Image (cartoon, rainbow, N blue to C red):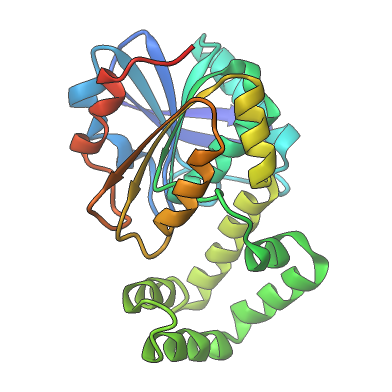
Length: 267
């Protein structure tokens, strides 16, 4: 079922799958919406309630607030959970959506039972991402790119031809910048995720200090989120299950989530 939650001057759109006692807050990837987690209802619906949120600047969410920061994100989610009469939850982040789960777990770890990352972004230090989303100069250049994308297209095509950049990755990024409205949305989405995404060291320290169990599923052939980042991140966690599958980035499939039901949570 689809619902709306009014917060300040914005409206958060979300869908609920399942009727179980265990609440899961799910955050989808780039250019998706809350229907991305509909497939979970069949296997998880009796034991879990999957609350899938349309991210800011995506889906049907109407976002009129200033750019998110970690404190506002926590206030938003706290008010949202209060409206649903839930307290502690499992956080599930796929791809870009993992930035939101990581921001939440670091800002309010006491409310998190487990962290589930599926091809999740944000596990490694990303100088370019930090530069264009977190600095005045970077944002100025980003705005210039929205109007004049030619040089970025040239770099992506050159990277593909020289095989520095996988062809599939180049095609994906080119498809996200082939019109000015798409480039403007890309800027909004990146900046929103970038402001609340913690550093990898902060994430690792928070998860270990609060004994939060992290379950991870990553594709061995993922060209967007290389599996080496997941391996490096997992080695530093005290409570972690890392599942590597012979796939690329598209991992929102029931068979990769069933292990979350069968594996016991660590203390």
